Length: 242
Ligand SMILES: Nc1ncnc2c1ncn2[C@@H]1O[C@H](COP(=O)(O)OP(=O)(O)OP(=O)(O)O)[C@@H](O)[C@H]1O
Ligand SMILES: Nc1ccn([C@H]2C[C@H](O)[C@@H](COP(=O)(O)O)O2)c(=O)n1
Ligand SMILES: [Mg+2]
Image 1 (tube, protein in one colour):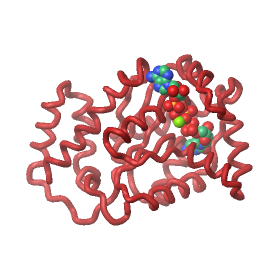
Image 2: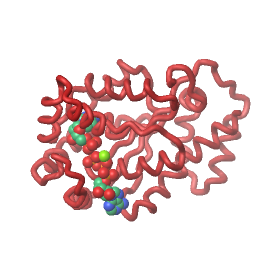
Image 3: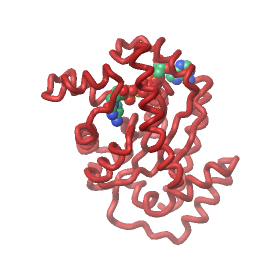
């Protein structure tokens, strides 16, 4: 369970995250990236207490977060926890909060943070994995602070799928998954909420050197080729200290 062990995270969270973040954005070649990480890792002693490796996956509605998470799971073995999927599951289970959640989602607004964080916490605790992709979260400063207070862990990596608005709208209107929020009226609200409430969270992580911005235009595979080196670098960094 994630409370017990996390092979990757203790080293990375305490030492190399900001290094990798800064280096990955500066270096062009994968080889030089891994070499530098290994050099930096030399002499480091990993602490015994371990915490999970957490990636927050952010981006506007329809920017391709869920699509890319599937590829990251397949390639790097993360457990994918989509905040939106967890909330939709809560609606389907007829829980006491179901009706309120449904209304928020229909309106394109944000569900109270405590509720979402508790669902994420349950998802993490019920997994044997120690690497999590938390998709569509934190969407607001309140989300972010609530996660820190309840879970008590900082993310190692924050991915931001940066996609032009007209492309996101086109994708959402073509999604065809029967989502109650895939209509033009709700999409307009979701875009406003993203700009007003989510962009400040993205800026927060940018200032802390944790943000990786992905240009989320092009084919799914082309976009994944921007994502791949980020996690490959972290894996190599982990191997370097084993
Ligand atoms: N690179 C791409 N090019 C074209 N269509 C894409 C691309 N990536 C994803 N899509 C499609 O766009 C739609 C939205 O993608 P996805 O569900 O992954 O977005 P999301 O960021 O998770 O959205 P939301 O925030 O609404 O959950 C889906 O129908 C998906 O198949
Ligand atoms: N942190 C979150 C994530 C999602 N929601 C609600 C509001 C979103 O519009 C909706 C769908 O999420 P998505 O599947 O697009 O990630 O779920 C929220 O309130 N808080
Ligand atoms: Mg999604």
